[in-house]
Amino acid sequence: MTKYETIIGLEVHVELATKSKIFCGCTTEFGGDPNTHCCPICLGLPGSLPVVNQQAIEYAIKAGLALNCSIANYSKFDRKNYFYPDLTKAYQISQYDQPLCLAGHMDYELDGQTYSVRINRIHVEEEAGKSVHSGDNILGSEFSQMDYNRAGIPLIEIVTEPDIRMPAQAKAFLEQLKANLEYIKVSDCKMEQGSLRCDANISLRPVGSTEFGTKVEIKNLNSFRAIERALEYEEQRQAEVYDQGGTIYQETRTWDEKLGVTVTMRTKEEADDYRYFPEPDLPPLIVEQSWIDEIKATLPELPLARKNRFIEQYKLSDYEASLLTATQELADFFEAAYQSFPNAKELSNWLTGEFARLLNASNLTIPEIPVQPGDLAELLSIVKDGKISGNQGREVLGMMFDSGKKPAQIIKEQGFEQISDTKELEGVIDQILSTYPDEVKRYQAGEDRLLGFFVGQVMKETKGKANPGLVNQIIRNKLLADQ
Ligand code: ADP
Ligand code: ZN
Ligand code: MG
Figure 1 (cartoon, rainbow, N blue to C red):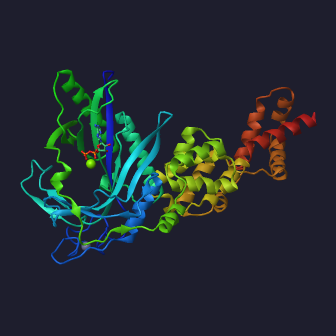
Figure 2: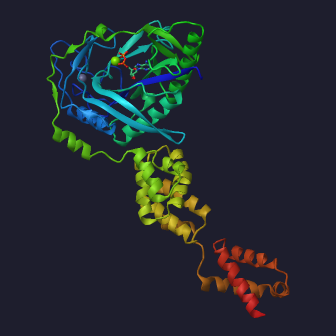
Figure 3: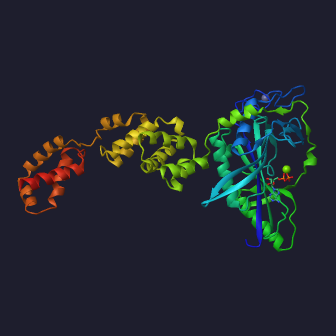
């Protein structure tokens, strides 16, 4: 695509990880029998009044700070009016002209380059309920049923400026955003459960033009891959329309995952259509600066900064550092283990190799496994000292995952410990050499390859536990000294 420049801006909805909903005490737990996590408030029954959940505001501020936004000391809630069965009140409580967070930015990397995307705003709102269609999708269904368990779960909507220029960048931006939000623990960011959802806006303009073209909004993007594919499709479609002298109309399209195409859903509604007005049942949201400062102080080092520090401090490659900082738990595990085993390369190899494999196979997260950072450090020290081999080390790690036992105990129980005690080995070696006097003579006469035979006999006698390097050395010393 050399004729057109692609312009992309994203609107990302993130469910906040509060225990209760934003305006009532109902649980936010995923699933549950339909309409069991509801009360008069989140069902919007007459006479019920909302009360804002402080934890939701704290998480929203935290997200805003992590994305370098300024936090408004004064913001307010508004009613966004529309009728749809998933919205019992026929309005959604949202924020319109005075959102909580404004004017931030977030950096991300793609193919070794760093990019920055400006964040226009982050506003707080409530989730709607869910329509459950009888068919595969709404078009083919005979009826739909409503589940309001989700209604009233706190949401933030993060709106970017149109700073993204390629579908691959949109995907990389979202992956970084997800990692950031996971690090600050404001959301579980499960795309498959809908707790992180993205609408993508895309337009083309002739290369060199400074004005934006007409944008199209794409909905129903349920995975990183879908986002990239849908944007690639739409980029192509719009280019073809322009090539043929056609016009792009502002509209909302939906991504059809099966067919791999975007389809017109509706022409774009304007803000006026929603008849926004200030929510009369909630007071303005006044946020004290001291509270913002308190929240700021709890922000952890974010993944990109941490990755770059890992490269600097531990002399790791970009790739290794990315793997290790992919989750906060793994990065913390690395740094804790490093305290007792300060060999970053070796530690990184184990963590991203056998450890990652076992973790993956166990279907557990790091906080759920019985292996502590100090245990891994201990195991690696034992391997490094040559007390057990690398292969045995991997076996021991597997047993540590299964049983939670300490490496030393497992090694003892399994009889893995290598014999590196010179005295003990000399005893065995003397016995072998006296059993094979002819072979000893032949070796001493220059038949070098018999060394392997002696070492083999010692290994057999010790059931493989002898330290082979040491055995070699002792035998050579003995036979050459005897000459
Ligand atoms: P609307 O008024 O239609 O809601 P906004 O200006 O609020 O549009 O932008 C909504 C989203 O669309 C933002 O993420 C923004 O970055 C993106 N956007 C705006 N204009 C364009 C454009 N011409 N091409 C691509 N994305 C755009
Ligand atoms: Zn409720
Ligand atoms: Mg808008």
